[in-house]
Amino acid sequence: MTRVALIAAVTLALAACGGSGHARGKPLVIVVNAPFSRTPYLGRTIENGVRLAVGEVNAAGLRVGGTSYELRVQTKDSALSPARAVSNVRSAADEHAVAVVDEGTGIDASWRVARGLPICIVFAGGAGAVDPATRPNVFRIAPTDHGVAFRLAEYLIPKHLRIALLHDDSDYGAAGASALGAAFSQNRSSVAVDETVPADALDLGPQVLRARRAHATALLVWGRPATIASAIAAARSSGWDVPVFAPPTGADPFVRQQLADHPSWVNGLTFAGGRLTAEVGPGPFTSFEQRYEGAYGVDRVGVKTRAGQQVLEPPETAMYAYDFVNLLAAALLKAGSIDPGKVTRALEEVTTEGANGDERAFNRSNHEGVVDDDVYFARFSDMTYAPVKDDPLSATLPTIDQTR
Amino acid sequence: MKTFALLPLSFALVLVLAACELDDKDKEGLKKDCSAPPPALKSAPQLPGNFPRAQGIVYTGVKKDGPTTIASGYLAQTIGPAHDTYSDAVKGAPGYSVTKEEQDAADAEVNFAGGGNTGQVKLLQTCKARTSVTITIRPA
Image (cartoon, rainbow over all chains, first blue to last red; front, side, top):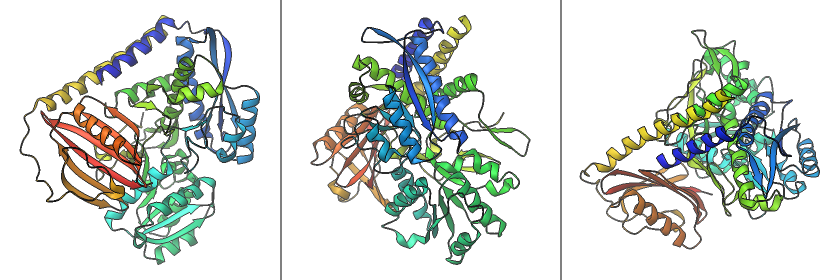
């Protein structure tokens, strides 16, 4: 591990030595395709992760095939609309962008109009989105729905809970429903009820009541942050203290903002997400977080702890976006070209150290950057979360500070 | 500009120190004599998808967590050879491939796909000459 850390140190040192802070070269655009207008936190954190890496790459200097380049960032709002997301990717290809960092909406169509341009998904984990054989230009650095759903099944089924599976009718919820269906297919007796609910519904009282009447002893809500908040509100306001489980959207600041008037309702919410720290410990992630905050400030959740401390959101999705840009820079150097096909192939051959200290890499048969076994569980208490102690992986992970 | 240049260097220093601290802890474990190994299962379990049996593996347990099968055991090897043993076993098994692998000072991971499943072999050297093995197998 020392070797990896030393490589990182040398890389950073070189970046510092070579960086004039005014990199000059031919512009090379990375497009960030994200729902800035619909889920502003998500869009902004992806953009910031990309910008942080771009700043570091430019400071080190990027010379590809004898030409100096300067990476630039262009944002395009998908508004969670597949049609708009596809249009954004088409224009990115038309404008000769070098890559797209994508939230994932519309990927089933956008990969095709990209005309070979590398696209990296950093949020949506749906099955089929990434397939090196049929979609060679699509990569992902984010937990997969398969990994999240199976890890949740592994965690919950041995507890002998009767689980109400609620998933909303958004693309995200539908993909989750499919993944949960597979994960619980061998253990249907653990499922009390399996129901689709309207995305962003303000009142999920009737659906939650049906779950209660089905003698559920746990709610697993897979949907947008608003759906998770509504389900919790419906359960707690009816006096039902049922444990609630969620995919990574459970940690979205919007859930806590919506429940800010009843902070105790958030207590006990458990979500599955990609581990923030690697075996090397919290050092690399903390270092990344400090650089992120130094550049863009902290991501405030907009709620406070009982002691009055501001609650912050660790830059998890930003980390994935950051890691992809570093892989892209390494691939450009390896390819010695900005040709999309050559860069895509080079992305299968390079390895970098990720922001959390783990290796990031793809290969010919695997374009997934986060393995299923890196999905952990964290539980909320007093508006912040900590890894649970009753899961072997989670129990080994440190708690990342979320207050100032 | 000088301040900017110093920042990455200080972060680099933090990284190196953090890694060194972990390496020291790991190395302590690697030097320890091994206590008696956990008892072996009477017969090797039949793992889903005909998951390959690596040369020298001693199985000590197998359980189901919901849809997932988790087998545990050990190899009487240090981490490097143990990693090679499992990497070779997976690569050599019909229909199986290694999707990602990684090795650190005392631990290694071999992620795989095959036999209708995906999963991970997690290896951790806990003493001088033994590496614990945890195999997680999930339906793909």
